[in-house]
Length: 115
Length: 112
Image (cartoon, rainbow over all chains, first blue to last red; front, side):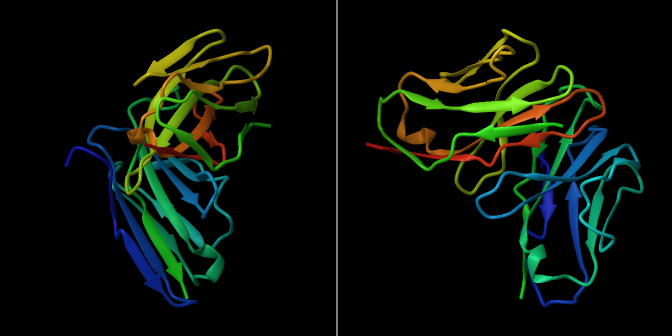
């Protein structure tokens, strides 16, 4: 499709398990962002990629969270030893412009529920 | 630091009513300002933006003016429709190589 694709759309897991969330950005977009949105809140920044490298990972809450983008396209957000507080919608966005006020194109999100 | 403060909701209006959703910001430098909208069951999408002071962004009958003197970017629409029911997010981008900062969102419901 033409938009940002995120899989899975829903993920239910048990506390302590490992989870991977995938983002397929719009073709040609060099910038890719991960955000987390808790109920009733706005998107909270996690990490931003420019190409293959993480340009800013200051939003990752702790070392259980990690993200990669090995070929500069698809990105995977990895969460180890999940906790109930990790439950949220994880949003991916991509953009043409690396750092200018380029429009962010969002996926529909991956809803993670940790039981 | 950078932050966005947004009018709390939820907001319920009758069709054809006037809408204002307040947004103020704190930023280092000269940010660009945005309104994103999230319709039920859909991802966030850009509604409008303004990249410098006194610019007015507009789209689908919505408008917002970048006011540096009051550090505001209030969203307005003269006559809302049922199809405008959604959650609206104000956001800023400080500029080059930076993340976007979002407000907490304002839920709007328009009733016939």
